[in-house]
Length: 496
Image (cartoon, rainbow, N blue to C red; front, side, top):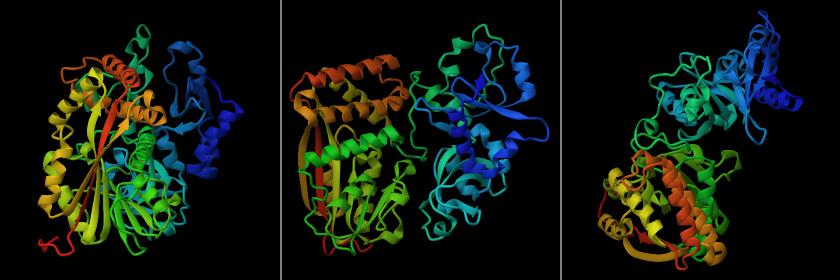
């Protein structure tokens, strides 16, 4: 444990000042006794001088913690505040947000604060300002960064994000389960340190299935079958995948035979909308909908005619009936169970204007060799367990669209090459495939491996063999099918 360097001190104080401003001085100049910040490994601790003197008698390798952990430095030198600093941030916070009872659990599971959950907010709170989040009973729940100023917040719709989540009081156990201490319990063997564990602190992924180390962030939305992560790695993969599909389908974003106008409305889930606005000659109104707001773009970077909302394609707002000219959805295969597909397509039909178009993209599977076939079977068994349709969704979509009332159905199946044998497209296709497998590792191992893998190491080795197989198997590819269908100008179902 050592004092912070000037550069480290600047990083810590800058981060703290965003939340407590000039009150930062009260952390150092305290009436009880002086306190200071010390660095132990990559973590920054806030500790009294008396505790520092006591710690001298403990050998550095045996010292686990001292004082209060305020945060940690990443390998790139960036400082991130930890939720254990919340008591001090709450004591000296300049700007505060109070959320309603129905917003507490979503926030405590790592979600952003929505306008619908806002109880109160400090007057004149700036945009991108650090705030402490409280319950309506003034209990500190965590902290975050405002997406809009107080004035702008009042103008937002109920589904808009007002505070980007940074940390919450449920994070302590989630974070500690990822620490070195829990990855290597033998590291404390022979050390006379007290370690206290909560009996309820382990997540489902640690209590069942195959024990594994790597952790990704997944949606906390209740009742969804969506198995892909919601983190920065997944954001990068989705951008790569979007570009792949654009190249595979002739560089066109919108395939429906329609020319959008300024007054038109378009519904989708995210990245595709930003590509559409680059292609469109007009400026249609665009709404992106997703269960998980973590992958939403920063609202301040979006054009005025594009916004995002939290929601499900199986239950869209009633006021959207006959509102949209185009509805686009991509890879719903990862989030919808069999019985939810019919409801989702009915909802798309309902929110489309008569004459409007739905455009869907779905995966038709992959081909390379026996290693990729093994992983496909692993995914299919997981899919059967979850009730999703990875095995054959593309064969059912035409029937679902027709049964709901869509007409003018068009299908277009194309292949994205997988492997370095195919040049840039093959390298990108292989990278996307590998990242899909990495993202699915946690849910697949949580399910126990389905008789095909027995350890995390086996899974990682399988993925590496697939990478080599794709690179050395000309003709390896991923199948993608685009479905286009139109809502009739005059439809029979009057309630739609």
